[in-house]
Image (cartoon, rainbow, N blue to C red; front, side, top):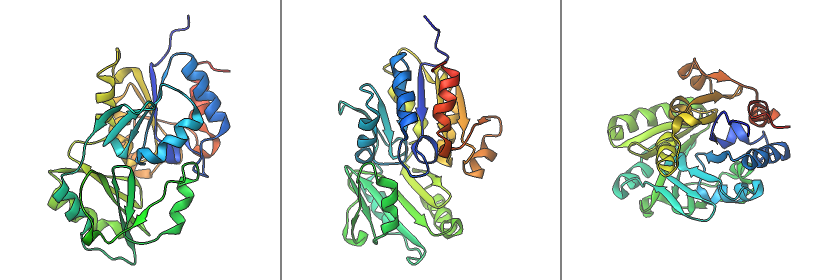
Length: 272
């Protein structure tokens, strides 16, 4: 029997496993199914909400896959078993949702339970959720609540729109939250010590292997811990330049547009 180079692959979605249309390609689906048939665990680790990810996982159709969502605030399997859940304290979440910012340049969002809330209608966000149909509800956050908040995130028109918000968040909440970027224009806040890596570690606590037996793929700053704490981390060619700078020793592979994660996996695991 062929010895497997790794026991699990852990992949980010947008900019990594998904193509430029933000859907999972047929070549990638076939690759993951063949990999699972070899006994390799498939884990998807994303900033997306679990409600958004379920249809993607069902499309891939791997029964034992695990999803790490909201940057590690939650993890569950396809059977609905909750493996990790970590909320921002209710009052803290409410305060962060109601920070002052330039509403012509930035919108604020939250993932709370199964739902996505936003302060204004932003139709162009729909393109990211074609597989799932997952969509937001517009609310007045001043009249909203902070219950069951997995993350609060700010989307700017340009990266510089988020600098002042990031500075304030780090000053006021840096000791009690985790703050990162999923893309250069999306600033995200989770509870203290939440990351894709911390969630992965908790998932693996019930398995007979650890982080060093995992290979991971990512393209954003929210992937840093995951990529650097597993046995091998791979950075996408289209990754945020800040990720490449933060992880200069990691291998850079091809583009998500070319389904490069699937191509890399096929070579590594000798899949034809």
